[in-house]
Length: 193
Length: 210
Image (cartoon, rainbow over all chains, first blue to last red; front, side, top):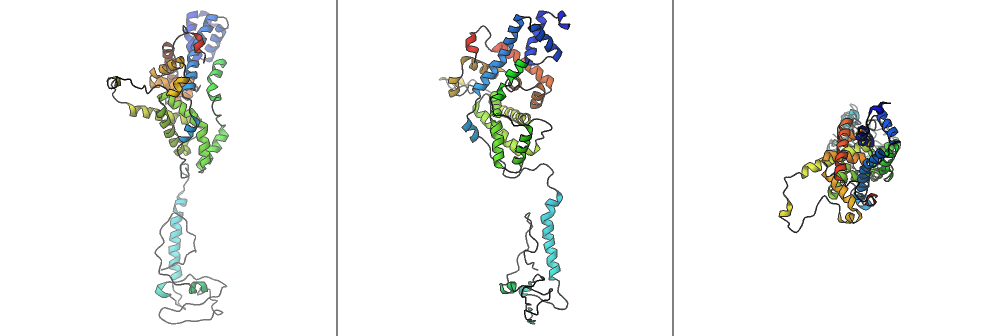
């Protein structure tokens, strides 16, 4: 065996490393074999381990936290959802902008006048043309040209305007919708020029 | 070796059980989804370990409390960056804690004068444990605490992580930002210094059995 050429002193010098787990497995095994037959080295190992035991016991006693105090020291949880890097795609970020652009483009399309039946509301406000089965009526033009029709005649989907819209007071032209990160449900507003 | 290993792992047995990786991964996901209760659970499972580490390294209760808060504030904020493939959660958390401790020490460094010249009536030793703990600490524990304070910060970090947390040298190296071999060298040196400073076997053995 290799350790037969190693003196007792050499082994004792390795005991701290043995206790600290710094030896290679084969060296630790040789030391363990030696300890089985050497009381002096066993005592030395106990002495080395005593250092670690004293440190552990001291730290355990001295650094013991108070449970109530620990709870008081907890920092607040982050308010916003912490997402991993790269989880927000470019489409997600652009979606609100695209919705707003769609609404603006839609308002232009809707405001395009019908060559056969031009119409404009007071103050230039136009209404969204919808196909509906509800009673509808046309709106008198601002120039005074009346184009009255009975409700039963107003089935033309290109001009049909819900009565509830006509009965409601005509609002002033709303300001341009702000660009908001919050998605806007398309069709929930009356687009205005 | 098994006896040594088992004696070194008692520290974890005496603290709250660290959850399995699957549980921890699920808990972290709950945190990242914004569930505040999950943050509380995560904190309560690890706060004691972090506090003890900070207190052991800085040896002042108030500093340890500040580091505890700073460490968890940072950990919560950067939780999405934690990669369980690279390291254990406690390794990641201890690395944050050690970093905060080092920052705390750097900020507190100032040229010093013996304050006894200004306060002839006596000065409170800030490195000493709190009064309520002194009553509980034996003379030997006070000596050991003082001996740890005499180690350099680098040696104290290594000694605490090895003696108290029973970590392998590879993990100690990851936490401290050094190689495993450097960690081994520091541990050897720390052990040698502590053995010299701590009262030897000549003392009454009855007082040494805690």
